[in-house]
Length: 265
Length: 291
Image (cartoon, rainbow over all chains, first blue to last red):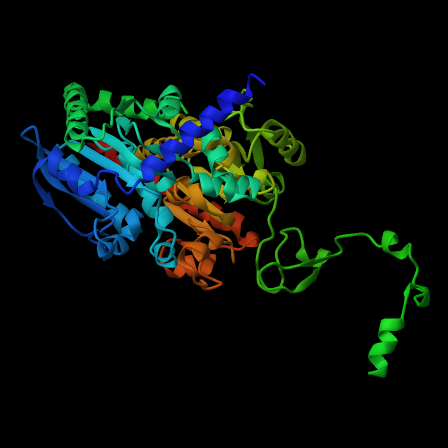
């Protein structure tokens, strides 16, 4: 009997985190961009025929320093939400992200990625335009991008679609966020053929920030209070601290460290 | 009507067939091609297990595939067995069963091989090992293959067949995508060749990592190649998708594959590609020296 209680508690904790990561009250990408950065200049297009609003990117000032910002976007109005498929990127989005990262490398700007996506968009059009290869290319190129990358998962971190923007030197999560191989519903449907057991799946998947930090998948957790301005301050101070450390490293050291970070798994 | 009534009234007692005949006829003499639905006498599939009507290559174990491609093969040293990272119920049992069925450690067989005069690092995924899914061990074996090949300055060939990430290993399976990609990038930076051959099925996290990071991407006829599964797409989009959306032939047209190569042609074609790149290697060495 002793073991039953903690499992139940785990399920409640995990289910609660899944719910708050997906909450409609979750801070929007637009608020984050406005509060964390100054002079954000959005840059569009993947340069091979596509533009995907599910990923916004551009150049901005952070503490007076130019940085490249890349963020998934769930949209704020219904129209926007539909246009960006509720934050699920298409290949054009990942290609745009990579193009902006390459530019960041060229101009020696750090890259900051903000991730809140249920996953890459599962549609015929995304398949036709090479979803798998677009994600693969990001993983491949990010592994040796010669500039610091910091990734923050602030809502849903859904599978390969999130990983394609989260191969940073530092990967952080916020208190009410999740990061997983698949949605708990999908996980339960595949393994138990019953998507109703999503809460049970959430508990077993180790998708909470605490579990992921313990496993070394993420480097730290940013406290996420209800007050959005305090939340943004928390993210900003983490970014300041990490950027300072990463920018002191020589590039070869930075890349060796990034390589080792993902090699351990 | 009379006829129908007669049919209805025929009971078991009226049938004089030999109840034991079923046991005397061996199973598996006829197979149905999952692509063109033709019935094929098992001998007509031949050594390469290929449908004579549509050229679809039946799903095949890693060891059988090995015999089609290489002249010699030295398997990589076995790795220490990994724990069950999520403590997923009954996963250990499932792994052991898959190991017994395939004779492999995990969903990929890796090692070093000779193909004609060429030395290569070689990895072959086995669709019979939990759907060829990618677990930690799969990722580790691929990563080590590229690492050793980088040191030995050898090209690598991977033959993929996978349903994608191994759900039972959760986020640790996802991390294999980043780990393998980084190892392939380091290999590429040394000017070394990587060829992937995508076989039925190559999907999910495998498509979104090592399968599509090769210099030359080949595929088998009619192989399913994609990221999201057909069912996922149809359920999310609430619409039917074209039956051939993820067939190798469509993916070729869309520009993501270099060539489709049937099994009989794979060995000579890959040998030719290796030879073409060896010349490239020596050219590169001379230019570096002349600097």
